[in-house]
Image (cartoon, rainbow over all chains, first blue to last red; front, side, top):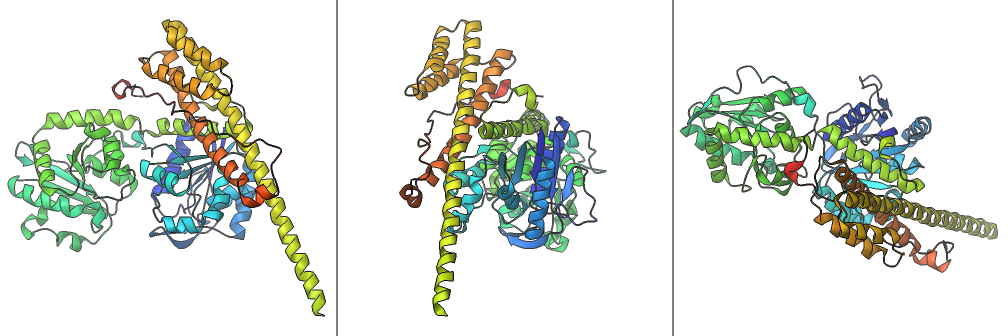
Length: 386
Length: 168
């Protein structure tokens, strides 16, 4: 199948959507399909061979953060040319409701269009105000994919349409055989040692870092050698100021990490803790921790419960409850057998999120979109679904 | 010459209205065509599922399942939704073994059917809302087509027990 994928955000900066697009494209190529990705990027930036640059992007505030996107007459011409040259069986756009390449591609497309919605936009007033314009865009989309139950809910409630839920994938193969950081995770015996991990913006309240800190401080006073490994953006001084002076040497801060470093970091801890208090639509980091073979302890959010299969693949604790988190951590660090059971189950669960598996489900949506456009049914073999 | 400007202005307005009407008519037409094609794809997937169910029923000597599959295949437009729901219920009662090729075929067919149904529902909704606009109704655009109909059935997705999912 010839597949054209449009990524609205620039490949010059890392981001969830960009990673998703690259992983999906690679998984589809791995399944034997021809894939071309159109994305904004600076002329001289190194790109994977399947990416076509749509020119420079401009920073634009969108949905609470700054996105680098491309829009305008020049971009329109490039999108049209790319679509004509590509002669795609299906066009797959990401986030088509942002003013971006994706929207241009939808408006220029003639054949079947599949759209993936990533963010769970809840600013319904904006959506309601632009409903008439958005309707023109939405009408040209044949099939919609939502990456999480929350994103799907937004679709149904605000955009008046259904969507197929296909989860985010995780490249399990990239995590296999990755070595932990030297000297980590270290010893972990009954009542002593052990390493906890946290990844994310520790200053952001929704990430729930204070809950983990409270649990860690109390547990560190009971367990000698307990360590905490923190990665993510932020100022180290600000982080260490949050801990009592006598415990600061048991906290290690890696700062912002790259994708390969992230995998190593996740392998370097006994327990990965996700104390988020909300705002999480999918829980990508949990699938990554599971792929790294790390035991996960997460707050009992809807998204987390789904990824962890209701608590089978990782331990859940009541959201915001530092005392229960403390007890859970203490008990799991003392019990290697239970940790092994959880990770074994995690391996099974994460197999469903592996990119080749997820890409096959995306291919089925492509097939449905193509079929709905020309009324014929595609054989499983032809699209390589089997 | 103020009279001239009136003429120019009126011509521009008429031209804009004409463009809008032509565009709207094209839009209604396109949406209805799409809904029709989606209905054909949905029909094909319904037949596929019923055929796969019949094969499974023959192998397992499931008399009720076979009957449900036959009824779904033969149902007329009026009773088809009920017949398909019946077939879904029968299939849900079957103990599915993921290692069996016939079971895998029915699970895959059901999944593809669920997608076809979702796409069809969305496209029918778009077509109906375009056709229901006051202007479109007034000018009787798209009257060459019958109103697109929803195909209202339960979610046909079959769940294989989680513990039995083969890890790839």
